[in-house]
Amino acid sequence: MNKQEILLAHKTYLFPAVFHYFSEPLVLAKAKDQYVWDADGNQYLDFFGGIVTVSVGHCNERVNERVRTQLDRLQHVSTAFAYEPSVALAEKLSSIAPAGMTGADGAPPKLFFTNSGTEANETAIMAARCYTGAAEVIALRHSYHGRSSLGMSLTAHASWKIGGSPQPGIVHAHNAYCYRCPFGLTYPSCEVQCAKDTEELIRTTTSGRIAAFIAEPVQGVGGFITPPKEYFGIVAEIVRKYGGLFISDEVQTAWGRTGGAWFGIEQWGVTPDIMTSAKGLANGLPIGMTMARAEVANAMKGMTISTFGGNPIATTAAKAVLDFIEEKNLRANTVEVGAYLRERLLELQEKHELIGDVRGMGLLLAMELVEDRKTKAPASAATNRLMEAARDQRILLGKGGLYGNVLRLSPPMNIAKTDVDEFVRCLDRAFTAVAAPVG
Image 1: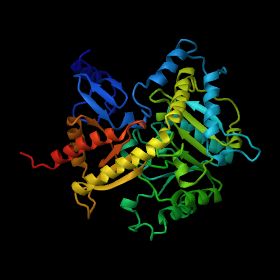
Image 2: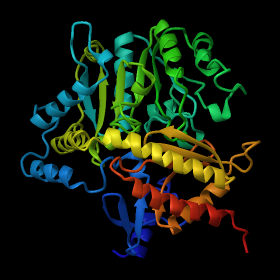
Image 3: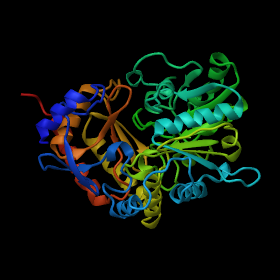
Image 4: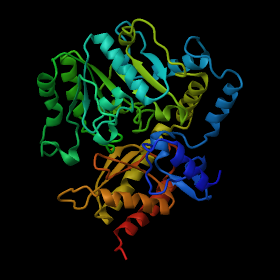
């Protein structure tokens, strides 16, 4: 099929709810390492990585070699059987879990594999409800937790809630959106009021007995909103006071993406009871994981299954990704190159008035675009134009935020500073093009 045939088939046969960043969808044909190519042969430097999914580079040969070997050995048997790739991955994940997730009797945390972050979060909520005997759940405003009925109910973005009928028993606490503080305060003199407000939320909008609190350490769709160091510690203490478990949604923040630590929540010194992840774990192959303290996992009585979850191919890929991250010391590379990228973005902020805020951690960085830095009026239309201009400059990045005015950057964790320099040069030209007078 040529490009026009692909676009026509896409429009004819796929749900129109499948969105695209550009006025004309970008048709991709191949990819390798940090680059992708479109159907016309144009090369793009990919700084979004399939929505924080390509963690170790497109078509990573080390990962793909192990996948090809496994594909010829054992492709699928379902969770009704035991097989080495699944338990090998589970053992590895359990060994890198935060130390506090080990049980009082020394029991390691346990895993349940699915196909996506949505399913992983569904499993986490189920486990929390089984363990606590309570049903109500607290999520955060500006959050995103998946596309299922429960996932959309946990999500706090109107545009991502389709079909109506949110599930009952879910309330949304204030997130730590310091750039747009809901209390009109300034950190640190605010004393993290947004976190402390969680207790009043529990006492006024729930029965006072909750099953769980779920949060992304850095909010993805929200625009890589990054809370101050005290936030999660305060909230976790409140949540546990009212009997709830702490669920860290690491779908976008795990595997060293925030720099140094394996998991994002470790940056705040808080140990969750349950963690979920997906995306970058298998570098693009479908996998989701729910990790829980043993006593929490053991509370899920009865039978459950995931036909494709944890299949031999996906778990082989995931183990290969983790091995590659360790062998290449990519968590350290994320710290170094992430800091360098942030410095370059701050240079762009000094040059372009459109950039109101630069935030994030490691190689999970964002720029919020505003019409005026004093009023902070969201520059949503300009953001759309910037996305198109970036495409013209042959770079790919993502978009997010409640107002659609946040540029999201999440390149593969094995990029170099030279890649950053190339990207920033192109992005600078894109900003200049957007700021130029029309006509």
